[in-house]
Image (cartoon, rainbow, N blue to C red; front, side, top):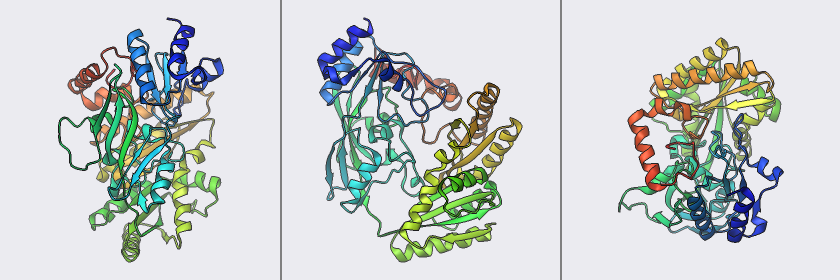
Length: 459
């Protein structure tokens, strides 16, 4: 079936105005936020509810047409690039916050709701939606669940999978199922909610999410410690954890990132420092003050050249904004920015930081590293000239060495961005052949025609 006929069949389901086939429209959905990956779809469709999603998937299965579910396209693993063409199924029309239940500490939302919108709605009820990826302004809840997004509160509170109670999911063959529900305790059957969380649109299409909320902390404050280098900052983080403190926030930026962020945001950061550690806590105001004071003391005892505590909520928000703007700040240094994601056990953070620096020097590349110090999640970010093909090849080699180093240190190839197409070449090295074969059998059980997001994960 050609694309014109396919578009006509899809228009019968969702309406003509919700189907796109113009060249400019297709080009916009040929890529996501991941550089160097692109493939044009045949048609883009915007369903309005779960029933329309089901009808689209039944048609695609019948015709063996690939389907790539997509939210805002803000992922950094090429998870929503339509490698095999076909249909890009965009869920951004599904934007309702269906319910916030304060007595049950939960919310029900459609997948196109932005992370920030849910967080603000919860805050208006005195509640906190914990997951807070750096892309929270644009990323959607459906995408967060599909990639099991992390965020700045991961050390103390966990990541997206810790807050997904239930899902409404459309299977590739058109059935609509509900997994989990409104309960913290429910062990009836296999935990399909956990399986689908992080499945990157390869097993089903998420059309509703039930998430857990927590009471909003009475106070939240942050501080900054400066160090001579990232490895020293990493050792200070280990010392903080060893004295029994679990910060709500524990983020780091290396010298390259500090300079780029200061030039971008003008926050008064010390650009002479080799590394910055952003730490924070929340809860009872007196306990927060005591916690931050003690963290500052431990940092000083372990090599910090300076420690500053934010004096107000506004100042704390400015410091958190500095961490969140790391990627756009670094992007100003070159015409191509490749941001990656690797995680090591927390005690290995300092060694991993040293390894990244050595790899960057060996390949003659500018790599700025920032990330989540508290859970060992690093984001080495290479800044290049998009026309320098030799440098791009060197960056691929460098990231291959970085992933190998993470695995050697007992870590993983991705802590929160997902696998997508970008990390697929490294997946077997991480999981092993037998586990990868199991993923493929699970994929076949959910998606016998192999239409959903082919070329990703177990495909």
